[in-house]
Image 1 (cartoon, helix red, strand yellow):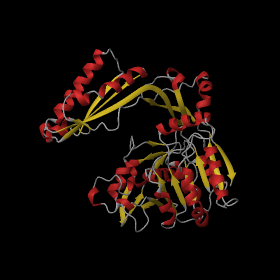
Image 2: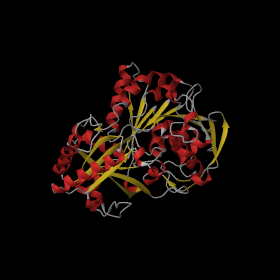
Image 3: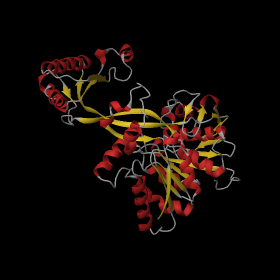
Image 4: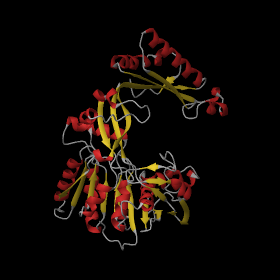
Length: 462
C-alpha cells in the first residue's frame, strides 16, 4: 500500500486553494525547492453546480479548464523531478479532465512517462431517483426537510469521498491523480498514507494528516494572505510563498514554505487557518476519521516554520456528506454611490424611494436586502457608533432582491437606474450599467450511508 514505510519525511506543497487561485503558485512550488507532491484544491459547493451546468451544455466539459494550461506549463518539471500531483480539478467530469491531461502530455513529448489516476463515483445526480425510491431521504442537515421537496430543481449531487481512492490510485503507480468531489483534506492525507504506510484505522495519524490537509487547503491563506496579526508587516505578499507540509511518519509535521518567498509562516497565521470552517473543534468529521482540533499543539520551530504535534483522532463515521445544489429562483443586485455631504442620509433616502416604487408596482420579492457599504455593511451599527454618519465621505447603496419570478427581478433592475437623475443628488458609481438577473443556486447538505457510494479508480496512460 505504500511507496516505502521507511521514508523519513515527505513534502507536500499546496498549489491552488480554490478555482481561480493564483496561477503562478503551482509553478513556483515545483521550481522553488524540493517537494514530492503538489496538492491542488479546486472545489466548493457552488463550483460543483457550475461545472454540472457546463457539462449539461457540453459533455466534454465539467472540470476546471484552467487546470490544463497550468499542467502544460509544469508537466516537464513534474516528470523531471518526479513530483506527483493530487487535484480535485476533475469536478463532475474527471475522466474528461484526465483525457485532456493525457493529450497535453503527448503533445509535450511526454507520452509513456505520465500515468494518470482517475477517481470517480462521487457523482450521485443520476442515482437520486433510485435512492429516494428506496427510502434514502437525504434530509437537509439544517432543516430536516427531505430532498424530495426540491428534487425537480436539483442541479448537482456529490458525495464527499475521502483519501481512500486517492491512496489506491497512488498505490497503483499514478503520477497525477485527478478526482471529482474528494475532500480538501484527503488530497494531502493520501500522500502521507502512501509514503508512510499508515493503516486506515490508525486514527491519530489519520487525524494528523487531516489537520495537515486542512492547514494548507486554502493555499496562501495560512502563509500570510489572511493573517490579522501584524498583517501590515507581512513581507512581500506580491511574491507570497504558498505553504508546504513537511511530514514525519509519526504524524508530526511542519508547515513551511520555500526560501526567498514572501509571506510568513507563524503560529498565529496557522491558528487562524485552523479555525477557518472548523465547526466543532473536538469533532472535525471527514470520511477518513474524526480529528480532535483541541489536541493540536503548535510551536514556532524556526523562521517560517511551525511544528504541529499531538493530534488525536477517533474512528470515522458510517456516513458520507452529500453536497446538493438546486435552483432557487433569480436575484439581482444594484449599486449607487452617494457623495458627501450627507452621503449616508442620501443612500437611505434612495433606498426608501426605490422600495416605495417597487411596492407601488405590486412587486413581491421573497427577500430584499439593503446594505450601506462604507457605513454599516460589515460591522453594522457598531461602525456608526465610532464614525458619525454625517462625516462619511461616500456611501454605496447596495440593494438586492430575490424571487422565483424572473420578470419581477427584471423590473427591479429597471427601477434603480432612474435614481441617478431624479434624486437624491450626487449619485455616481453606476458605470457598470443596469444589473442583470442571475439564477440562484442554493445548497442542500445531507448524509448518506458509506456503503451506498462506490468509489472508482481508473488509470490512464499518457
